[in-house]
Image 1: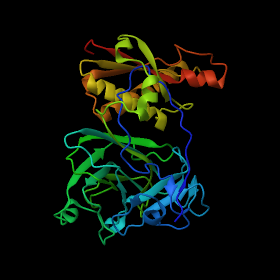
Image 2: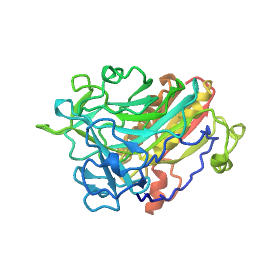
Image 3: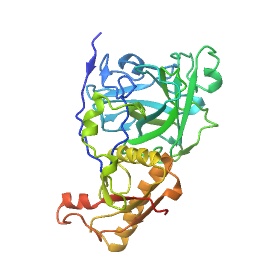
Image 4: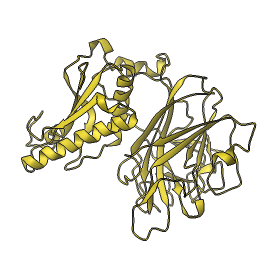
Length: 374
């Protein structure tokens, strides 16, 4: 058996505040870069990818840039670049006759009882999908699962294994379900029961219970998603050698200035668009962590554009960008009365609008942290 690994290039950006430092990622092979064999056929995820399997007879797929038949970015269900290396998974979360596909991975060690963890991963709806779903399920278990079925893994079905222990997490996340272009981060927190050794991802509801909508007329197929970079991290772990570099690149919380305008480092927008990019969502997740740990603070989001187009249109676009950021933080769990937003169009440029680089810098979102009630 030969294990192959492609190591992605990683660039670290610096936030203007201290990051709430997490411990190491508990998921083995989180972005599917380590594989036993370059994928050649559909449905071979359980034998191609190291440290991962499929808990049912559903045929989850593995895509990797090393392959012609199962390559990236183009494959049988659409086209999606791999942002975290050269490989990612693909599976049906909704299909006729309650057909389902799942992924099952092992953790590096059992999670600690009563400790709070953050689970996050990136998804993108495949272009050929006829449906999109609005809920994503995650199940942590003490023992690995194996069921001879191609249908949904309901709680009733899983609990037939009375010796196993489960921790079920559901993410109802309005921003991820219908995007076919960008990777969207799915994110939540949970408290461990102390028995979690395996992680399962998918849709654990039947078709009648699944919140979904049609993306095409005459829909007959299903909702097929690409998935990448799965992370489970403790939120209150000590700073270790692994994240010392991150700590050195951020400022102390005591250095953060209240009532001062700060520019998000990675929250930039493509021309004439208001959708968040994957890099933006990762940074916003860390901003949410900070606000979640400082409940007396509030945040104001201000959106900006370049000067291409009319002033009226740019004002509306900048407001939409600020609203997109605000709604993302609200979806993560930030109380609505702790956040406000506004758009200023192209009235306050940071750089010259005569170059594309300058215009990109002006297509930005800023934030102000305050202690004053909004």
